[in-house]
Amino acid sequence: MRNLFLASVGGVIFGILVATQVTGPLIAQENDKPTVYQQLDLFGDIFERIRAQYVEEVDEGELIEAAIDGMLTSLDPHSSYLSPEDAEAMRVQTKGEFGGLGIEVTQEDGFVKVVSPIDGTPADEAGMQAGDFITHVNGESVLGLTLDEAVEMMRGPVGSEIVITVVREGEKEPFDVSIIRDTIKLTAVRSRIVGETVVLRITTFSDQTFPSLQEQLPEMVEEAGGMDAVNGFVIDLRNNPGGLLEQAVKVSDAFLEGGEIVSTRGRELRDSGRFNAESGDLAEGKPIVVLINGGSASASEIVAGALQDHRRAIVVGTKSFGKGSVQTVMPLRGEAAMRLTTARYYTPSGRSIQALGVSPDIIVQQPPRREVDEEEPDQQRRFEADLRGSLSNDSLSEDERRQIEEDRLRAEEAAELRDEDYQLAYAIDILKGLSTLGPEYAAALARRSN
Image 1 (cartoon, rainbow, N blue to C red):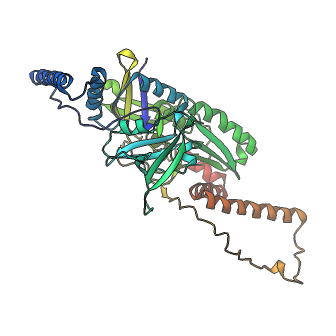
Image 2 (image 1 turned 45 degrees about the vertical axis):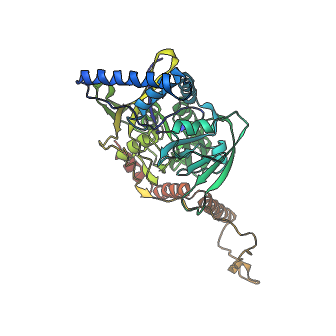
Image 3 (image 1 turned 135 degrees about the horizontal axis):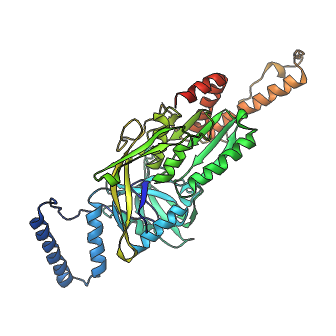
């Protein structure tokens, strides 16, 4: 199995990848070999004592795997041991289909923290949000458990129910969320047209991502009436937890005519590299807005950082997650594997976003959805045309009247979108504003990226 480079958040998708946070053994300096051998002897002594004297009989294989996992997870939250089952599940994940809840998590302050729910999954439909803390699973506390143990509690057969207790910022009391486990089929890219804007929602960076983008973008442009009829593109990376570094590079390259996309720097030369864009912009220089939030992590941050540094896109939303390291999945004997942090990545300007995240060019918070009070009567406004005996407007032709009505309808649809998704509506408004400035300004904007 070839080494697999990942740029994914330091958590797991339920039913797939397990990463724990426990204290590992003391690690001596590499050149102090006698001390290393002494510590290995100490490990052997402890192992024999446990095997011979622990109050209950232990599984020797599980004990050794736990020691290996502890050694790896003591390094950082993203390095971990993958059992043969977990290694196979990870390979399935990169293909875009797996069983579980559809939620990406990490561990913080002893609790399981939601990085992001995946679009259209049971967790998303149940209302889980980025930043939620999971305190109990089916009434049992997860405090003090490793992430591995907590995730194991959440696993179960497809179709079964799980009740998760959630603590959410802004809510006074914890509350329960019921989720039915299901087979998760990731749709890497969803596209649609809103007015004159093509919206590309990228949910994950799996093997499917760039091929889907490459297929759907021209289809949306054709549906809109050609590139001349499109005022720009929105690349929606909100709640995208990351994935394959290779796919992040390809997606960035799709909108750049040249220059560096990302660089990786590790302790060894073989773990360092530089990825550059090749000529060819799928958007043909049209303005781009990238949407990010706190659930945008790793590979998402590579794309947002590259397009921002090249001034190819305006980044809108809230600060991203801040995961700036690269993991390499290395095969081990017996179909197992280990995921080891081997490098940090840097945006084209040389900045590391580790623990800092990508800061938007324009900060736009997503307001909470307003509850509509059905008992509240509508406030009807009266206009001049509603008054009895008002004069008609005889200065407009039928075509002009029709155009005014169409413009009004588009304005009403835009208002509805602001209620539904304020950040997306804001991004589309930016592209509308750029469009009104004319093609010369758009062309100047595109030239700034070269």
